[in-house]
Amino acid sequence: MESWIWLPIISALIWSSVNLVDANIRRKYIKNSIVVSAVTGLVSLLVLVLIPFKGLHYPGLWILVAALSSGIIYVYVLPLYFKALSVEDTPTVIALWYITPILIPIMAKFVLNESLTFVQYIGFFLIIISGVLISLKDNPLKKICVSKAAVYIFIAGIIINFTYIFEKYVYSNDSFWNGFILIQLGTVLGGISMLLIWRKKIRKFFQKSSIKPISLLSLGETGNIIAQGLVGAALVVAPVTLVVGFTNLQPLFAFILVLLVSKYFPRSYKEEFKPSRIVSLGFAIILLIIGMYFIAA
Image 1 (cartoon, rainbow, N blue to C red):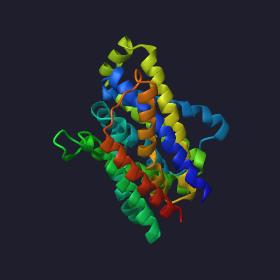
Image 2: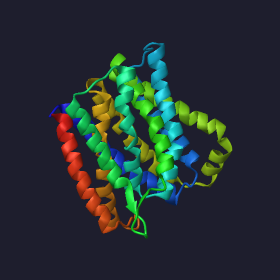
Image 3: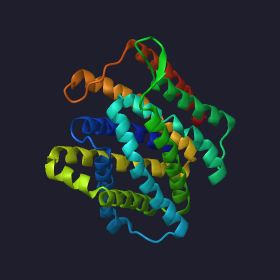
């Protein structure tokens, strides 16, 4: 197994933890998704501490545009993500998020001229199918229905696909640290623009809010920055389709974390799952393992 594979897997585990923090914040502390998204973008100012050590240079117009666009798009997609967390359990939201990368192979082929082997494509789609299984739920009539968060996440996921393509382009044509810092600065620009557009709502939030939700949000975004850096390091050496494929372990990690937290820390986070969901998860795990084997083959 190639060493880069562990980078998106670790990222998926970090993101699963961040998702639980985000869900807790959205449901208990901050009801406005715009406010949460703006603050999340501003936390990326933390990357400024890297500049004295790693430097920052002008990489060329199109690389700069791609890097900044990636960060800005990410911030403006977040309100849909946070809205979905407010109406659906965390594992389902994450699973739905990772169904949409089904378009990544097509985009990578036409934009980046990136191709995989036939077996690797099969592995990628098996992992996507596993996410679909986790996203399906049973209603009281015992019929399968699609999650109510599907619309929000489908729109957000389609848009976020472009950020992966932009990031792969950046990391393929610039140094890792310069590309990473520029992408995070794009996130900051997105947060600042939200701050200016919705300044009244955000000002009202800061006037009434305690330090706890801001601290939790900052902690979660710090984890997100680390995960994005790990994915970026994988994109330097690996096809974007495979990197995204391995981050699809996130629904599995999220499901396990939610079960553990719900059992041992029910006051912090509580979700109830029917036995049928557990069965679906078991089948999804089998597909994940097979898909990972095909991708790594």
